[in-house]
Length: 435
Image (tube, rainbow, N blue to C red):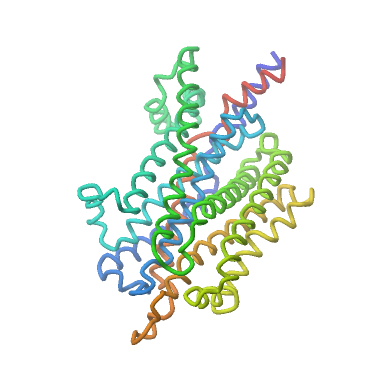
């Protein structure tokens, strides 16, 4: 009887909750940012890419920085889920749904920001009509589309047992959401045969998404590495991008863990131990990414070829030096120092470290794109002064901020509709512990 009551309590505590006043304000802010971005995009469509500050040399700007950032975050979201499930990591169960939601939100806006960067979105269908497999951009379209659908399925299949539970609480969810839950999972009876089939499907998806996730970020790195420019001419780019993606993805999961834990009072389910273990994972990823950063810059810096000299000097001691050292210190070095101490792996310090990692990672992506484009192999001659530097226009900032707000809005809506922590998995773990 006590176990039954405890089980009902777990269900009640983990059910999705309606937005309170603070939640509505949060959604309102995100929607307002998105609307400003929509207006800026309307201006871009009407007047063309001339409203941006991208020109002949910096033809990729903040949009592509955002694209690489979103791909990085989405990568580890699904990988965390896949690795935890395949390895049978029990302590990671409360974090898998959070990671899956982040992956879906990020990959949606990675796709959208690429269309924004094209300038003429009506040409997008040409990729499918006349796409050439020799083109790295075509590779990206293929792997992103594949990754998007696998990520959706990896979110959906583990939700089915929880949807059956949600259907019992029509008065809490309301008629609209109840119909939505019925559409998604009314076929799920929860019998042994369905459970085994679902488990098999989830395992197949977990196995499939690991090479796809590695491929998507490797292919993204090839978009740069196959372009002969100072700073991009590197065989290290694939591993460098993947190491950075693991770091920023884990950092975003830590930030989401703290926000959901605090906002929904989930202290019993997302515990101090979870933060401690994620802190250990994060410090390992910081050290790994620091190694790849040293490896990426030390060799060309030692050789100091004429073609690379301007780029490296600008990055380390020139106009981009403040951003570069901010990204390295804030996103890699300081997190390592903080996380080496047990006190630094408590929830609040971990939240701060997670924000530092995410912010540092965004600036790192900006530095991957812009300095290289401003230092071509052929020196700039007889060009307007504005071509020799780049700072995003307000339209670029508005669209980029709207894409970030849009990704957070998707995650916010998903956590309003679905349980943040898997209910059935938590119940199963509780029953096993009670035996």
